[in-house]
Length: 378
Image 1: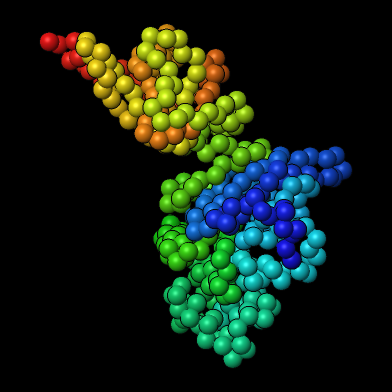
Image 2: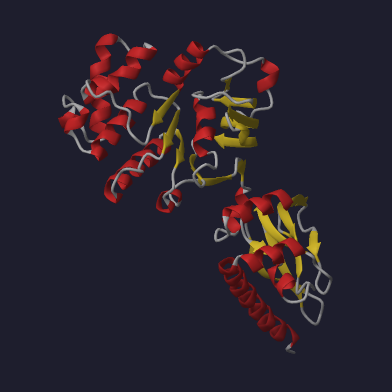
């Protein structure tokens, strides 16, 4: 079930999921259309990741690539150190799926003629995991974990929708998989039931499990480690979406396609005061210092900016001349930049984002004005 060794050598041992240039095309009577357009994505072990996007953006298709339910047209999918498509038959992939990952569906997919206990035992039977006599006890332990041990012998129709989803989660964990994949797991639940589900997921993550969840609910994405946005079959740069969360997805994707990345060495100057500046900056990794000089030419740090902070907005909004010296901090800083003309155009189309960025720019300029005044005092 493993791809040739050379194909997997460059995949980090920390990666639970690695997608490389994944393309998915569909054909129908209307012609061929591309749902995933060269997706590259790495999710590390122990991460709790949410995937969001509008209907038709490719969320579920992306999830199906990870679970092996569907096949990529092109590209490589490595899950838990296994290339799940290279030289693997459908039956092999099905057995791998039963042992290696748990899947939680929006509509539960419990078998209606089996009790909750029997539903949870089913993956163990299929994957031939655990001794036959151990399976009922393990299933009961999982139902107890999700608070359903008293309902173990009931059919799904006799419990609530929230309890059905809890049973589906217990079933997904039946073979103790390292990866749990959930497609809108709280979409049909009330807020209280949804919170119970997320608390369970958080508990699994604390035990070292990796969870990937598709959701539309922003109250849930705020509780995950990472929030990955897909738009029109392409992933939005995560630094862009975190730094400018008010932007429409199409604008985030536009910035993703326009951005340039550069790494600055410790204390390396990014730009100097009173020099023209034609780009908007977002910190992807590391820290950045905003530095001023007093009348004695002594430098002091006005502020320190960190991952997902942006800068250069004051310069772009107020004439294009830099108002301070900006340099990398004590370690390397990876910065992404967007051209001035594109940044201004998108701000003109995004008044909410422009208002937020404008307020930050005004506050920073006022802080600098006060600092400049103090620096000139004898």
